[in-house]
Image 1 (cartoon, rainbow, N blue to C red):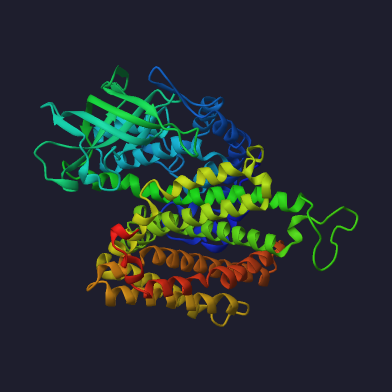
Image 2: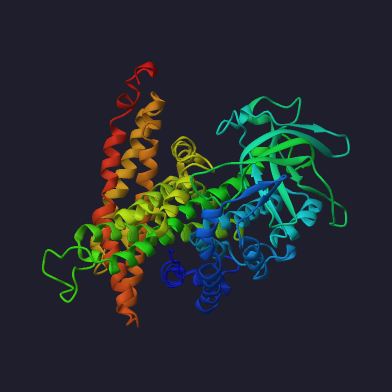
Length: 591
């Protein structure tokens, strides 16, 4: 069975040596000294490694079952969920007013990585609840907040998001679910939603569904969509649970992965609901949850790559196969370990450089969210809005690829369920699809985010990279990191200039290159993170660190990413500059 050990040392390094969270002016960050964050991370590592990780294979093997309208989760899940609740982990970064611990979002995101690496399907129950609670916190009335948030934050009640219908996925303007006003402030919802993660299960007393629906007489299309709170059990004025609402799970999906999360078809039959936010502004409210979910899904790509890498590394060190071409490295054994072979090293370095760079990227993104929300920083909000489709799209694409590389190191054993490596690949695959398929993320990035606020945020990103390169140009040891980063940033800017020159007269020219641009920007973001980590480790070595091997390893990994991974931007630029013709030449009936 695969193992998982939370990378708390690396998390602490990113938080304190690279991002220097303890020095940032964001409200609440003055409490984030190294001793405090290490205590939180170490405790989280215990429950994820000792309680959740052993259930990952159990959940994959058993899956969920539907019995008389109730979904039964796999053996051990209910007890583990209770332990997570009792430890206060579900409300780590939520307001104290409603029972949370009010830690910064950056700490919650570090926890999310651990939960998802240990057991992605399990983590989704809590993760979706967190997102639903965040939407109510942002858009709910005081009465709605006091009614729902305390029990959602402690996960006595869980939450969902209900968007997709059988006939519409991304194009939510086509939805048919209706919400009829009742005259007392409530609505009756009728319709069917599909692909609803955690839609029904046996681990919570109530499930609070956030449901998109149309109020009759409203505008056509997406402008006529509103968001509603629809509880599984109606909630009394005193918080007690009342009658069962008109919402039920019709079936659960048989899926490629995340078997232990109940992906439900939800039927609404005159279910009572209450408007959340403003009438006909449902997408605005739902995007509070969706943007948080997209960052959480990006972390799933990183998380599955991390746990797959950990196990592939162990296997490469222990499995004896062949001899090193430069001479026996295990002369007393029948063969050398896999890790002596250059191609195995190449694969492991691809994985290592990705997971560590991606971790720095998402934690940096979390500090931007804290700056935006806690510090009311509009520039930080604009930057994380720009980066969100990159976090979601690039990290899940690359994360899936890394699980495949990890599986490949096992050879034939990677294809056998006994070794557990296929689960990481199967579980990672969904992250490229849900919360907005990655092609949609690329379209969002190029079609909306680049031009947002007159393009000021992407220009601020370029200036950030340029300033870092300039400020570190005279630091010994930085040149191998800065020169490739400079070239990659130029490639990205040239791609943006191509879109500006060609996009207005031929929009297909821009959209045909959107996926490449998302990956280009992802590589530049990880390149920037590796340059920042390189500087942090050079400083640590210069200051006489007690752990020189850790920082030398960081520098070697940084140089690898710059030399072997970052040049992909040149390929992506060439594909973008080829324009729309290679993509659009064939008529639909010629495929």
